[in-house]
Image (cartoon, rainbow, N blue to C red):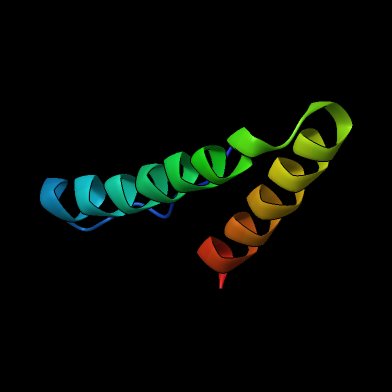
Length: 56
């Protein structure tokens, strides 16, 4: 579960969530050519990187 910092306004909150969701879709799309454990590891690593970038 990704912890997304709350925005001060509804619009800001929506914008932040959209950005994260687009990145998640991009990661999953990139992983489509991989299989099994290789795909799982790729997705896990990219999600961890994404989570760290969100917290920064």
